[in-house]
Length: 164
View 1 (cartoon, rainbow, N blue to C red):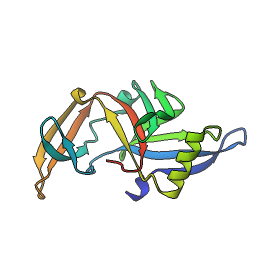
View 2 (cartoon, helix red, strand yellow):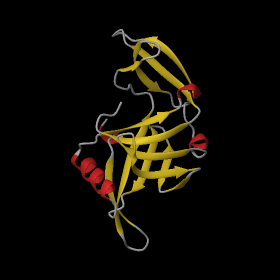
View 3 (cartoon, rainbow, N blue to C red):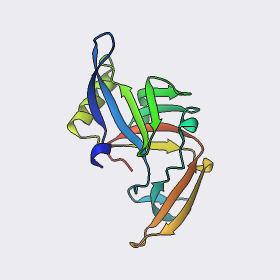
């Protein structure tokens, strides 16, 4: 996970102001998730997101919030139709999330400290289950690999202490 762990970078704006920028991958292509459970089907599985599952054009049409711990009360940033306080970029690794921490916000300061200390080592995302396409195949360890090939819409990315 190394280089894909959320990071803080001090950046200088054009006006000379120094700010802390958050950078992390909310979706990572072709890497297994932790073992999860599909309660409706009674299956345990690891999810893999295919690079074809998400495109920049699709991301730029979404209204996506960035939260801490999947809690909308802990809102950190937002990207609506490619605009807002957060930037989402699809590259060869996955969907990268970037935003600036606002020192006037208590939740921003708390999360900035947790990320800096390594207490929040990853990210996750939420999407609508009826808008995606997947295939299942059993791995050598007997756990199903769920290969997601199309996500039509997602609505949240989150900084997480226990990312899937």
